[in-house]
Image 1: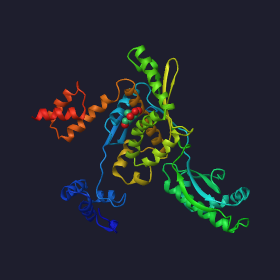
Image 2: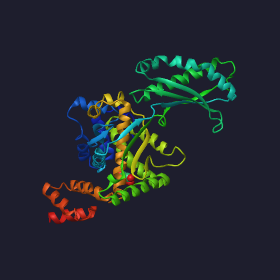
Image 3: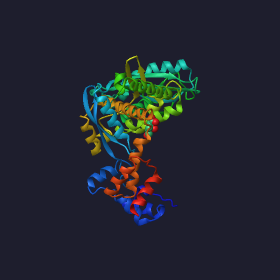
Length: 435
Ligand code: MEV
């Protein structure tokens, strides 16, 4: 395997040639596989190439739509970018199920985003506090050129607090900063403000008489936090228990088993992780389709699932004698302006499809996608099991691998209605059919 210096300076074609020559066995075939995904529209291709560095091709994900989502009495078709089979189908099924039962109700509980200036200081805690009081207004003033535009849109810095963490780490303090970024995810805005706070802190510290060169604050880093427990959204569905089945007994049994599944995911981390993974199937797909940062959302949501010290289910069920209520509460720092949202043509389509939502509206739609996904997964798990639905898509994927004709597909679908579609059984079926 080869090394190279200056890879980033090579043209795209040269990068492909180099990687194929040194890392891929069948050069010509590999080159074809990579370049067949290049878009013939040069301008569009350039746009995609420039999203990231060292791009050699495009990596497609299916862009699907889950229709019929009634959210706060308004109907949405939700765009989902996801490679996993059954996810979009499950979301659509859940949407349909809740459509005539009042649909989804949602509420944004907060929109505060967070970031920190992490710094070390050997001075006495009281000295650090006094210093902070003295520079607080300066912190805001020096950041003014950065906050002016955000303030015009109703956002800005909403608080700066000094936190003493020296009981956990020697000499460690932080400026815990709150931001309102309105429709922007705001990562650049927040990080720029924090870096300015860091500069102000160090510059003011040099002038501060109580500090010496030995005990002056030293900034370690300035960065937003993807843990945003005050940027929170809630989604809920509710219906009389009797509507959960075709008979009273069936409905009661379903409600009981559904609640047991949620209770298990609440106390058992092994189950909670898979349970929440299913929720993220819905959330990530919408986050991705709308051009948001799914890694940030994932990190923040999983941290929230462990907020009381144990990793737990993100969804809850409440059962009264007659009523079933199922809800989710998650932190979501997302945006509908800036970043990819104004660059990626399909992201623009996704946002248009949702009626150009504000960030708060999108938070609610995303929470609904997560709740719907969880409803569908748990519904299957406590009734038929998930393999029945999964295997249908699995069958299609295997048939695709074999480049099955339409006639072969129809025969396979018919046959596997009554047989289990394991990989080996499908291969056997196709081989026999072709023989
Ligand atoms: C698969 O992607 C997701 C599920 O495992 C979620 C769950 O178990 O709740 C079906």
